[in-house]
Length: 238
Image (cartoon, rainbow, N blue to C red; front, side, top):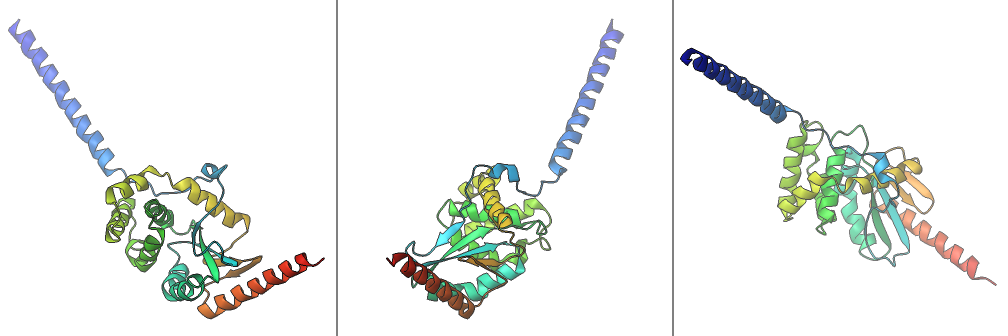
């Protein structure tokens, strides 16, 4: 009887050991399993209207739409070198309003994560602050600098904290993916217009690929304003 009990105890102990080993292996797999890169589902955009984020007076006579990718070096060049001057001298003076339209390119591994971060900042009313920060720090989080999505997430939260966002709310938004359908809808608009590269600017019915200087933007905005004035004058004629 004692031998039978001992055998049962050994069998039970062996079973516990196996269960423990399996548990450790499973936990190790879960812990080491790579976090997927954030991507967009085109189907999620169904029924959503592309909108983008606008800065400037709604009464401005001309709207400029930029189709941009946060990981695009050319977009970063425009945002850091030319955009501040354009905002100060054209947007803030009421000559134009500026609409940022998401167009994360598939060639940029971390672009969607950055657009997700910008829209989560927008949920706290700080899109443009985060916009500037993302472009200013591309070398920290772009595909060359950060391959692990966990590291990208950590950097995005650090950037959010650096611009005084509520980090907990930001992280919850970032992880939820709730902003991704709208980003997908905005990208769908770029695809509908057959935009080929970033940055690309749409002013009226004209499309201008590549970074624009203040002087170029001023000329294009003025030309569009004159076109609109002419069209309005003709429509007002008896």
